[in-house]
Image 1 (spheres, rainbow, N blue to C red):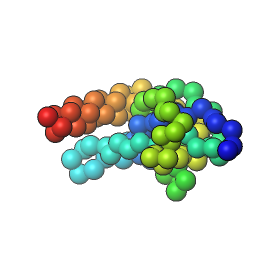
Image 2: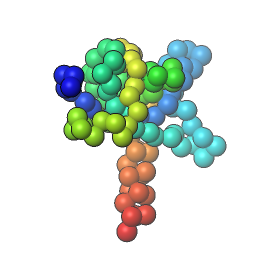
Image 3: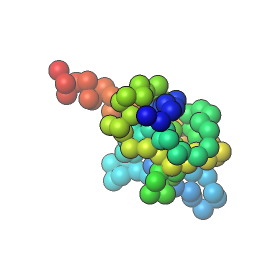
Image 4: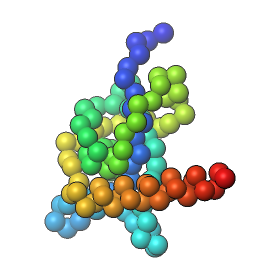
Length: 114
Protein backbone atom coordinates (compact mmCIF):
# COMPACT_ATOMS: atom_id res chain seq x y z
CA UNK A 1 0.00 0.00 0.00
CA UNK A 2 1.26 3.50 -0.79
CA UNK A 3 1.92 6.12 1.84
CA UNK A 4 -1.08 7.89 3.30
CA UNK A 5 -1.38 11.63 2.79
CA UNK A 6 -3.37 14.39 4.48
CA UNK A 7 -6.83 14.64 2.91
CA UNK A 8 -9.20 17.60 3.12
CA UNK A 9 -12.73 17.84 1.77
CA UNK A 10 -13.61 21.18 0.18
CA UNK A 11 -16.98 22.77 -0.43
CA UNK A 12 -16.47 25.07 -3.39
CA UNK A 13 -18.28 27.17 -5.96
CA UNK A 14 -17.27 27.66 -9.61
CA UNK A 15 -15.89 31.11 -10.44
CA UNK A 16 -14.84 33.04 -13.54
CA UNK A 17 -12.65 36.08 -14.12
CA UNK A 18 -14.47 39.28 -15.05
CA UNK A 19 -13.09 41.95 -17.39
CA UNK A 20 -11.00 43.46 -14.59
CA UNK A 21 -9.46 40.07 -13.72
CA UNK A 22 -11.38 39.63 -10.46
CA UNK A 23 -13.00 36.29 -9.73
CA UNK A 24 -16.81 36.27 -9.56
CA UNK A 25 -19.22 33.45 -8.72
CA UNK A 26 -20.87 31.65 -11.63
CA UNK A 27 -24.56 32.17 -10.90
CA UNK A 28 -27.59 30.41 -12.36
CA UNK A 29 -30.77 32.14 -13.55
CA UNK A 30 -31.95 32.33 -9.92
CA UNK A 31 -28.74 34.09 -8.84
CA UNK A 32 -27.50 31.02 -6.92
CA UNK A 33 -24.09 29.40 -7.18
CA UNK A 34 -23.81 25.63 -7.45
CA UNK A 35 -21.76 24.31 -4.55
CA UNK A 36 -19.93 21.01 -4.92
CA UNK A 37 -17.42 18.91 -3.01
CA UNK A 38 -13.85 18.03 -3.95
CA UNK A 39 -10.84 16.63 -2.12
CA UNK A 40 -7.08 16.79 -2.16
CA UNK A 41 -5.69 13.99 -4.31
CA UNK A 42 -2.34 12.23 -4.22
CA UNK A 43 -1.15 14.26 -7.21
CA UNK A 44 -2.73 17.62 -6.27
CA UNK A 45 -0.25 20.44 -6.90
CA UNK A 46 0.22 23.45 -4.62
CA UNK A 47 -0.72 24.12 -1.01
CA UNK A 48 -4.03 24.87 0.68
CA UNK A 49 -3.90 28.16 2.58
CA UNK A 50 -7.42 29.25 3.58
CA UNK A 51 -11.05 29.66 2.44
CA UNK A 52 -11.32 32.07 -0.47
CA UNK A 53 -8.41 30.45 -2.29
CA UNK A 54 -9.02 29.40 -5.90
CA UNK A 55 -8.18 25.94 -7.23
CA UNK A 56 -8.48 24.20 -10.58
CA UNK A 57 -10.33 20.94 -11.09
CA UNK A 58 -9.01 18.18 -13.33
CA UNK A 59 -11.26 19.68 -16.05
CA UNK A 60 -9.65 23.14 -15.60
CA UNK A 61 -12.70 24.64 -13.88
CA UNK A 62 -11.79 27.46 -11.47
CA UNK A 63 -13.40 26.97 -8.04
CA UNK A 64 -13.30 29.06 -4.86
CA UNK A 65 -12.90 27.15 -1.60
CA UNK A 66 -15.79 28.06 0.71
CA UNK A 67 -14.88 25.71 3.55
CA UNK A 68 -12.41 22.90 4.25
CA UNK A 69 -13.11 19.86 6.41
CA UNK A 70 -10.72 17.04 7.41
CA UNK A 71 -11.59 13.84 5.56
CA UNK A 72 -10.62 10.37 6.82
CA UNK A 73 -8.16 8.79 4.40
CA UNK A 74 -10.36 5.71 3.95
CA UNK A 75 -13.30 7.86 2.76
CA UNK A 76 -11.40 9.78 0.09
CA UNK A 77 -12.72 7.78 -2.88
CA UNK A 78 -16.27 9.08 -2.50
CA UNK A 79 -15.16 12.57 -3.64
CA UNK A 80 -13.55 13.81 -6.85
CA UNK A 81 -9.93 14.95 -6.47
CA UNK A 82 -8.98 18.46 -7.49
CA UNK A 83 -5.91 19.22 -9.60
CA UNK A 84 -4.08 22.36 -8.50
CA UNK A 85 -4.24 25.06 -5.86
CA UNK A 86 -3.71 28.59 -7.14
CA UNK A 87 -2.25 31.35 -5.00
CA UNK A 88 -5.19 33.57 -5.98
CA UNK A 89 -7.81 34.66 -3.44
CA UNK A 90 -11.29 35.97 -4.23
CA UNK A 91 -12.54 39.21 -2.71
CA UNK A 92 -14.17 38.89 0.72
CA UNK A 93 -17.65 39.72 -0.63
CA UNK A 94 -17.43 36.81 -3.11
CA UNK A 95 -16.45 34.39 -0.33
CA UNK A 96 -19.19 35.73 1.97
CA UNK A 97 -21.84 35.29 -0.74
CA UNK A 98 -20.74 31.71 -1.43
CA UNK A 99 -20.64 30.91 2.29
CA UNK A 100 -24.18 32.27 2.78
CA UNK A 101 -25.40 30.03 -0.04
CA UNK A 102 -23.63 27.04 1.53
CA UNK A 103 -25.45 27.69 4.82
CA UNK A 104 -28.79 27.92 2.99
CA UNK A 105 -28.04 24.72 1.08
CA UNK A 106 -27.12 22.87 4.30
CA UNK A 107 -30.29 24.13 6.04
CA UNK A 108 -32.39 22.96 3.10
CA UNK A 109 -30.70 19.54 3.13
CA UNK A 110 -31.36 19.17 6.87
CA UNK A 111 -35.04 20.11 6.41
CA UNK A 112 -35.39 17.66 3.52
CA UNK A 113 -34.00 14.87 5.71
CA UNK A 114 -36.64 15.44 8.40
